[in-house]
Image (cartoon, rainbow, N blue to C red; front, side, top):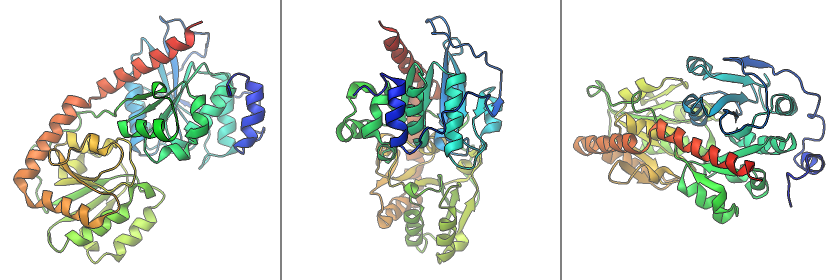
Length: 409
């Protein structure tokens, strides 16, 4: 079935099936918000010498690894080849100051507090009146509606993303992968999952690992003063499984009476995390901080970094911790073992096993020489293999390959 062969036919089939109906497809209107430099909305089919207009579609600009990734990517794409914009479907502008500092164009399509009919109607109008050459949806909801509405609106190229092992079922990949010219993922484990479980052809998938700014994230000049700190910087979402980390700390705390656990982040289960902290017998040694655009001070104060996710792609926070010279204790999921090399840059534990994670954290806290050696190895890996510039160049290559294929007669 060629889902994109006939926009009108696809509209009749797909919109009711996904529960959208026909109400979002109103007449084109001006975008709700535009920040950054004014972009000339002339959308003739581009020749190679002209920059391609690329819209990076996000749910919001709230603090999160994918949002930061989008900003860093947009800021580093060659302006001679690509004219990148950030499009968001709803309110949430934590990263807006960073976007402005980078001089990026941000289009907030809707000011709603959640993605709904108004957001989708705004996306439809934007795609019709400000149609990009290439639409690149990044997070889960944009990967559903960006692919569907992008095809219906006649966007020349749609490049999907799958940034975590938990994302394919949420994104309906078994149905929607044909709507993407190519699918990008950030870990080999995610590519394998897409290919074997969701039958996405291997030739339609590219692995581009995340990058980290190794000049911004650097080891502390001297060991931090004060008690040892286990740092977890993660969105408070069920997939991050803060419950396992808190349970692991409860097991470890009696053996390490000086150690503290610092949790940094916001998200839908924050209140549940607060309740679990309050129920801990060691709650006075657990500190909770809101998300922040600049988290370097937390890495500088940390002794080790911990992550207890149930599923992952390739987490930005692990790369930031490694670039900051921290040994990492993390769960063996998704793309994590592709960067946290057990016994070399940190320790891995099975997901959902507090006792195993407690042992991993305890080993790192209890052996300063091992911790420093792993921290240096982590820094070396981050610098050698995960630069932001390399990440951006690989995206440029992928985008150019997709565009060249679309231009072939």
